[in-house]
Length: 163
Image (cartoon, rainbow, N blue to C red; front, side, top):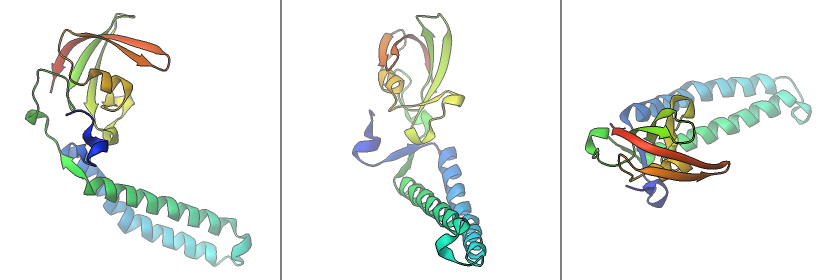
């Protein structure tokens, strides 16, 4: 699979993440825009717009809202649903759950490889485009790897690959 997300514009998402993004877009279009129009209207009613910081802040917030809506629409227009059962289990691919042993500390960690749009380090979901994600892609169980990162290198052994 490699990193095709940039090359052909396709964004691979799980069905759950696609639904989350669709819901967020719907909410922003329906309620976000209505709230923004109300705030701008209130700020406008406070008089001289040239010296109205509240109006400026509301207009800037409106720009951020519209940028988020545009980004969501762009992501969703390029989205393809990917199911983990469609992928082989012999190598690390997107949606692989990889159990690693840190060869420096001896600790074991488990990461799920996901698209950049779904990455969440707090939940051990790492992007396939991150240095670690790129280093793991296509590797097999039992392999050891040295992955260069800004702070030196990460040394891991792949213990398990699951879906």
